[in-house]
Image 1 (cartoon, helix red, strand yellow):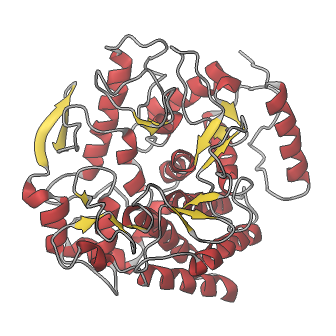
Image 2 (tube, rainbow, N blue to C red; image 1 turned 135 degrees about the vertical axis):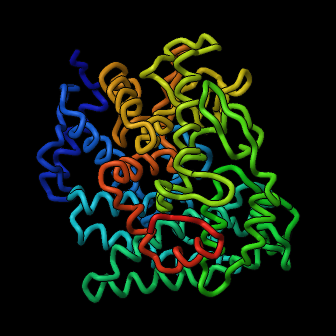
Length: 456
């Protein structure tokens, strides 16, 4: 059934067409921008979702820094002074999205390169602490915006997400022209200047999430698995300048082997002890953030087969929504996906469980899982687009979350939820970001150091 855009989306579509006519962005022939949701092929729909979502990181970027805004609310309601706040981890995802956009022809290469250069020039001058970036920065100044009272310094996890993106971009540009090679070299410098070993707090066999020049280690948050942070330990072990020892991974992240368990549900087993979510697995972003560049397809170590872990994690999430034990309105085989996102009561880590499933579906959960469950993710994509239409679709793709049960359809976006969508769709379609990141020689060295099998 054809659904008409709301007046707002119709106007946005006209503006978007104007931008395209001015060659600000290139629209491939198989992308349809109109005032109706026309039935198109699944391949064209994937292109449309990638294209619209990448706009969050191009057109929607903070103008001074080129970085990804933490959030964009189409309803215009923001926390105080929030439109100038950029996110480092979300910008790492955005860098990878821009690469996918350039490769697909959605973004002219020179415009993509110019934005990447703007980002890198900003990062060179922005606040860093032992080479690591904070979670949030002010886009006009590069000064830290505290994430919380004592979280006003380095966030090594968000830094890892940023470095994952920069390393993929370094590889993408390394064989380009002189300007691109120079930009790649600056990205390499930013990577080499991160003091990963500093975050072992003087040589402990674990990495600490935060450090502040004012509060030092008072946050006292050890990063232990399993959750979304595997990429942190891979990068820390791979650093050519400030590496951590293999024992930090095995004793810290893997808890001396205690990371392993035998659990799962619906016949799908989990080998890793998902922190606080052992039976059903954690929110689905745990299967996304570390694997935007890190290729899970043949990734194994003594603790898990990471492809199978992610597939089963996703299938448990899908099956929970399909069986719908909480009797939430709208859940089905095609309407599924629980992860951290907005909810009617604020940001919440949605996942299977009586107290952790609030009846809120997050489109990023199903869409970013497309490499693991392509048929189920495409079914969700079709349902979201054709059945729910403008209730959850806007200028930058699907909105962050919705609840049919509560008739709650906020027109709001978050960078960390938008970023994985075009990146994981691209990995499903071409493996591009996986290939780029895994072509980093130091990453392969680090994975070998930790006794991983990779298939590379």
